Structure formats: structure tokens, C-alpha cells
Length: 428
Image (tube, rainbow, N blue to C red):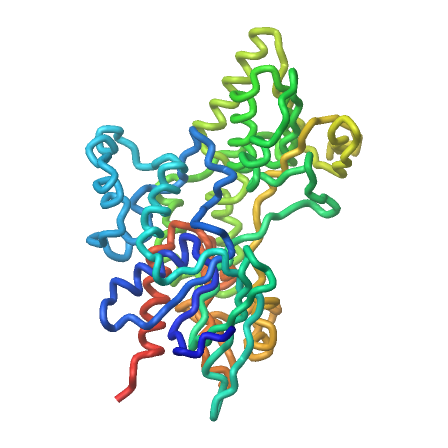
């Protein structure tokens, strides 16, 4: 079935925080806003549901919500959410800058619920096809599959695409997910399905915030469990969230990074990687250390840390998973049996090219084979493709460390909205 009633000005693929912020920015432009629709394969709005651990907090200020850095007066701000939920005074009295992850998820869902007319959940875009015009390709056709009824598809036409398909889980080579081998993104869902047992043993792989949160949660939720933490560092490293270092997440830092030479870009990543990658909040590090020390005082050893180590293999067996752990200094390998192995090994950007199909032939690449992207997050294309392709994510190589982070969501979506409005605005 094809929707031939109109050609959309904007079609958004994915409706997580990035495209939600874009939908807000477009709505707040009033009458000049282009027509837009968004498609998301999930049955309803959700954001990292598998890691909504009760005591886990955000790593950014509530002021870095969907709108405030772009427009502090927006009715979609976190403060307006608190007012609507009847918790504004309570939050102020709490004297915190970082809400819990569960509360921030509720904020995002509250904002998403105000867009029922523009988002189609349970709708997976499986292909994008060029529609030739008189002089250039100025329109694309989206093929949309109904997730609940896979044999049912429809199409729609759009003049601009905004891809916000999120991140993909990163796993070590050779690791395959199974009933007993998990990625942290599905942690709480899988944990709820785990059958009861008198004792539990877990292996957690990774040295970042998610790995530390999973480890701490398991120690608290399973008092008799043994937890084996494996990572290649000597210990958990502290996230640098100091005021000056945090400027790498400022909107102005995007301009600096975009205009910089490849050498300067590499140095910025090297200098400030510890603000985001494989690092942990200091309070959480102290909590895990406290738990381990108190266990030693009590004469028990629930948490074992295999530092300077890596997992060579995770093989499901009848009684769980055999994990081969290599101690990197001397290459010795130990096999540890666990009920479950959780790989908290992070994410990688989704490659937009497979979805774009033939449109990829019109996108220019840089000397490293990466997509060329202009300052407003629009892919640079040949003149034969007039349809705009915007990327929310997969632009770290051009826009820096905050490319896919919530820190820049409000500003980034505003810049894309401005570019889209300029692209569809009639010329006199």
C-alpha cells in the first residue's frame, strides 16, 4: 500500500531522544514548520529500558534536556515536566543536578506522548529508494514494514530524511548472544527471566559506567552471588566531569572540532576520551569498593576483579557458560564457569549506508572512506541528489565526541530543524 496523498517534507527514521527533540523543534516553529512524520520499529517509546536500574543516575545535568540549551522557555523542558508531574518543589528540595535514569526516561516518554499524530510505532523502515525528478532526485520512497504483521508493508514519499537509528551493541569478535550470554542493553529484561536458584555466579565484562552499574546491581540484588568483573584496565577509571574538561560538550566545541584538521581532531579525542569512554562516576567506584571491602571484613569474597585481562571466549555449557579469561601481562588463561555472562562492552554507531541503498552512491566520502557531512549534519551529496539526508549520530568523525550524546541533543536538533526549514522554504 502506498500513501499517495502527499509528499512529506521530512521523514524521520527512529524516534528516540534525537528525533523526538527534532519533532519538538519543528513544532515550535509554528506555521513555518515543514510537514513531518517519524517511524520507529519499537512498539512504544523507550530509551535504554534494559538499563533503567533503580539507583542509576544520569551523567548529565537535567538542564541538558530536549530543549533548554536551544530554548529555555520551551514547554517541553524537564522543569515543565516536573511541574506537570507535581514534583517541581520536591526536585528543587532534593538539591541535585542529575536525575535518576528512570525519572529521565519518564520525562522523555512524557514528551513523546505529545506527538501521537506524527510518529508511527511498530513501523520499521526496511528500504529507501530514490525517486527521479526532472533534473535530480528530489524525493525518496520509504518502504515501511509493520513489525506486528511482517507481511504487511506500505510506502511513503519524502523530500528529506533524518536518520536517528541509534547505536548498535558492540561485542568482542566471536561472541554470540544466547540465553546465558547477554549484552548490557538487555540486562534487566534478561535478569527478570532468569529462573530462581540458591546461588548465582555472574561474569561482567567491561570497565565503563554500564559495567560498573551492572556489577553493583548484582552485588545488591543477589547477596549470595559471586560476581567476576573482567576488564583490560588496572581498575575502574574516573570519568572526567570537571568544569573545564566538560567544555568538550559545549555547543561551541562542535564548531571547533568541525573546523579542525584531522590531527587536531585526533588529539581532542585522545585528550578528552576519559570524559565519555570506558569511565565511571567516582561515587559508583567508591560504592563498589565499599561493598568489596565490607565483604572482606566479613570473610566473604563475592566480587572478584580480573584486571588487565580480556575474555578470549564465552562458551555455553550444560551448567552455564565457560569463560576463558586471559591475564594480559603473561598470557595465562583461566576458565571461569558462570551462570550468566554480561558484556557491558558499549555500542557503535549504526552505519546508515545499508539502509540508504542506492542513495549511498550519491553521498561523498572523505579520504578515510567516511561520510562527508556538512556543519548542519546533512550528508554531502552530488548534485544529482537534491533530497536532504540528515544524520543524528554516526558523525563523531566530523562533529566530535558529543555527536550522539544527549549533551548536544537540543542544539543539534535545532540546527537540523533550521536547515530543514531553509531547504523547504519557498524561494521568491
